[in-house]
Length: 283
Ligand code: GUN
Image (tube, rainbow, N blue to C red; front, top):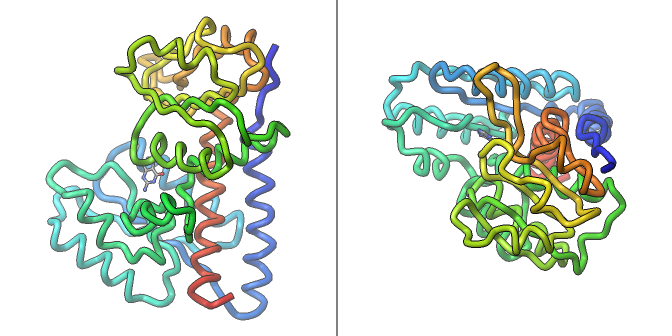
């Protein structure tokens, strides 16, 4: 049976370190503030934003929630973000995605000051990750690297297979594993003979958004299996991209859903906000 990777515990350690540093900065007169922009009433986004706010409270970061009606125009939203860019009391800016369809998400992301882009979604930050000279790492992939490190297994030289190619997870995950000297293969829902790739993975990251997509026969014995999926089932329960109950009989380590990758994403957001504040204050 696989060892369960406890994302809540690893996230707590990350947040504890952030909390200590935030307190030190506060004592030297530096307050840290994260602006979270939410457009519309998407229920899942509201939950994510609330969790981010709670995490800020826990580590001592001030959170400023900025809510807009779902009919806000592109010009109004860009203008609001520019105001946040110019406000030196705001250290980090996060625009909760997805945005309503009439808004141009890419332009909105480009309007965020890269030095305040704590999601690391701005093309400048994405480019820096490509060349290994980053200011911020995207929260979910960075959290996954911490989870892999928590197993004690060294990524260097391992066969790493990422299933999924999104801009938020799959593509940056590939770069981070490569930066750690993994041998990385990127697959996706249209990959022919996917099992031929996954079966050789020492480290398998599933980020396709399809419930139970990774089955036990696709997993190498003793592999580290990371499940990024958060799929809401009809009965309201959450289900990952990995068939947990069967894969845990084969894998060496596995993340649960919930309680695996999710808590890490928020912990790394706190870390990025702290990093933004330190850079802005030349600390
Ligand atoms: N929506 C789902 N995940 C994320 C995330 O990591 N950041 C933002 N801004 N929106 C999201």
